[in-house]
Image (tube, rainbow, N blue to C red):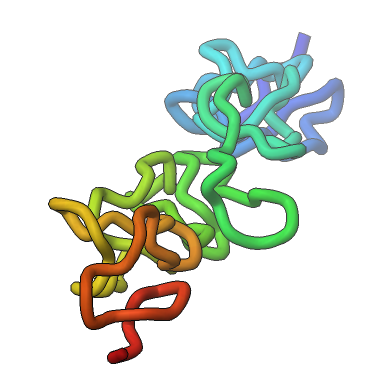
Length: 148
Protein backbone atom coordinates (compact mmCIF):
# COMPACT_ATOMS: atom_id res chain seq x y z
CA UNK A 1 0.00 0.00 0.00
CA UNK A 2 1.35 3.36 -1.03
CA UNK A 3 1.42 6.23 1.50
CA UNK A 4 0.37 9.53 -0.03
CA UNK A 5 2.02 12.81 0.89
CA UNK A 6 1.11 16.45 0.39
CA UNK A 7 -2.63 16.29 1.14
CA UNK A 8 -3.27 13.64 -1.52
CA UNK A 9 -5.25 10.39 -1.39
CA UNK A 10 -6.22 7.47 -3.60
CA UNK A 11 -4.50 4.42 -5.07
CA UNK A 12 -2.14 6.59 -7.13
CA UNK A 13 -2.30 9.58 -4.76
CA UNK A 14 -3.92 11.59 -7.53
CA UNK A 15 -6.82 13.10 -5.54
CA UNK A 16 -6.70 16.21 -3.34
CA UNK A 17 -7.82 15.95 0.31
CA UNK A 18 -10.59 18.30 1.43
CA UNK A 19 -9.65 21.44 3.32
CA UNK A 20 -13.02 21.15 5.11
CA UNK A 21 -11.93 18.30 7.40
CA UNK A 22 -11.78 19.09 11.13
CA UNK A 23 -8.09 19.68 11.77
CA UNK A 24 -7.45 20.33 8.07
CA UNK A 25 -6.43 17.97 5.31
CA UNK A 26 -3.89 16.35 7.68
CA UNK A 27 -6.78 14.20 8.98
CA UNK A 28 -7.72 12.92 5.53
CA UNK A 29 -7.49 9.14 5.08
CA UNK A 30 -4.77 8.62 2.45
CA UNK A 31 -6.64 5.74 0.78
CA UNK A 32 -10.30 6.85 0.85
CA UNK A 33 -10.05 10.60 1.40
CA UNK A 34 -12.55 10.38 4.27
CA UNK A 35 -12.20 13.04 6.95
CA UNK A 36 -11.20 11.07 10.06
CA UNK A 37 -12.35 13.68 12.61
CA UNK A 38 -15.47 14.82 10.75
CA UNK A 39 -16.23 18.04 8.92
CA UNK A 40 -15.79 21.70 9.75
CA UNK A 41 -19.03 23.58 10.47
CA UNK A 42 -20.98 24.14 7.27
CA UNK A 43 -19.93 20.93 5.49
CA UNK A 44 -21.14 17.32 5.24
CA UNK A 45 -20.20 14.14 3.40
CA UNK A 46 -17.49 11.53 4.01
CA UNK A 47 -14.98 13.86 2.39
CA UNK A 48 -16.74 17.02 3.61
CA UNK A 49 -17.36 17.87 -0.01
CA UNK A 50 -20.89 19.28 0.36
CA UNK A 51 -21.80 22.67 1.79
CA UNK A 52 -24.97 22.93 3.89
CA UNK A 53 -28.08 23.59 1.80
CA UNK A 54 -31.81 24.23 2.15
CA UNK A 55 -31.61 26.74 4.98
CA UNK A 56 -29.27 24.77 7.25
CA UNK A 57 -25.91 25.53 8.85
CA UNK A 58 -23.40 24.47 11.51
CA UNK A 59 -21.92 21.12 12.56
CA UNK A 60 -23.45 18.43 10.39
CA UNK A 61 -25.82 21.04 8.92
CA UNK A 62 -28.24 20.39 11.78
CA UNK A 63 -29.09 24.02 12.62
CA UNK A 64 -31.85 25.85 10.75
CA UNK A 65 -31.47 29.38 9.38
CA UNK A 66 -33.72 31.87 11.16
CA UNK A 67 -37.12 32.68 9.70
CA UNK A 68 -36.05 36.26 10.44
CA UNK A 69 -33.45 36.20 7.66
CA UNK A 70 -34.25 38.53 4.79
CA UNK A 71 -34.40 37.42 1.17
CA UNK A 72 -36.70 34.95 -0.52
CA UNK A 73 -35.43 31.72 1.04
CA UNK A 74 -34.08 32.73 4.48
CA UNK A 75 -30.52 32.17 3.24
CA UNK A 76 -27.74 32.15 5.82
CA UNK A 77 -24.05 31.31 6.08
CA UNK A 78 -23.59 27.52 6.11
CA UNK A 79 -20.86 27.96 8.72
CA UNK A 80 -22.38 30.21 11.42
CA UNK A 81 -25.96 31.05 10.43
CA UNK A 82 -25.39 34.75 9.76
CA UNK A 83 -28.16 35.88 7.41
CA UNK A 84 -26.90 36.38 3.84
CA UNK A 85 -29.24 39.29 3.05
CA UNK A 86 -29.56 40.76 6.54
CA UNK A 87 -32.68 40.60 8.68
CA UNK A 88 -36.27 40.74 7.52
CA UNK A 89 -38.29 43.66 8.89
CA UNK A 90 -39.11 43.04 12.54
CA UNK A 91 -35.93 41.10 13.40
CA UNK A 92 -32.43 41.93 14.62
CA UNK A 93 -29.17 40.32 15.75
CA UNK A 94 -26.42 38.47 13.90
CA UNK A 95 -28.65 35.51 13.06
CA UNK A 96 -31.89 37.56 13.02
CA UNK A 97 -33.55 35.38 15.65
CA UNK A 98 -34.41 38.31 17.96
CA UNK A 99 -37.67 40.21 17.44
CA UNK A 100 -37.55 43.98 17.66
CA UNK A 101 -37.67 45.30 21.20
CA UNK A 102 -40.66 47.42 22.25
CA UNK A 103 -40.70 50.82 20.60
CA UNK A 104 -38.74 49.81 17.47
CA UNK A 105 -39.60 48.37 14.06
CA UNK A 106 -38.41 47.81 10.49
CA UNK A 107 -35.16 46.61 8.97
CA UNK A 108 -32.79 45.60 11.79
CA UNK A 109 -35.25 47.33 14.17
CA UNK A 110 -33.57 50.68 13.54
CA UNK A 111 -36.75 52.76 13.32
CA UNK A 112 -38.58 54.12 16.38
CA UNK A 113 -42.33 53.85 16.84
CA UNK A 114 -44.17 57.16 16.62
CA UNK A 115 -44.48 59.13 19.85
CA UNK A 116 -48.15 59.44 18.89
CA UNK A 117 -48.82 55.73 19.41
CA UNK A 118 -51.17 55.32 22.37
CA UNK A 119 -50.39 53.33 25.47
CA UNK A 120 -47.59 53.57 28.00
CA UNK A 121 -44.77 52.31 25.78
CA UNK A 122 -45.73 53.68 22.33
CA UNK A 123 -46.02 50.13 21.01
CA UNK A 124 -46.12 49.54 17.27
CA UNK A 125 -46.04 46.60 14.85
CA UNK A 126 -42.40 45.47 14.62
CA UNK A 127 -42.64 45.00 10.84
CA UNK A 128 -44.45 48.08 9.51
CA UNK A 129 -44.58 50.51 12.47
CA UNK A 130 -48.38 50.72 12.65
CA UNK A 131 -49.52 51.49 16.20
CA UNK A 132 -50.84 48.61 18.32
CA UNK A 133 -53.30 50.81 20.25
CA UNK A 134 -55.26 53.93 19.33
CA UNK A 135 -53.39 57.17 18.75
CA UNK A 136 -52.71 59.58 21.60
CA UNK A 137 -54.86 62.74 21.53
CA UNK A 138 -53.71 65.12 18.80
CA UNK A 139 -52.41 62.37 16.48
CA UNK A 140 -53.98 60.31 13.69
CA UNK A 141 -53.08 57.92 10.87
CA UNK A 142 -52.02 54.27 10.89
CA UNK A 143 -48.69 55.18 12.49
CA UNK A 144 -50.16 58.04 14.58
CA UNK A 145 -47.59 60.38 13.09
CA UNK A 146 -49.97 62.91 11.57
CA UNK A 147 -51.13 65.93 13.60
CA UNK A 148 -54.88 66.43 13.95
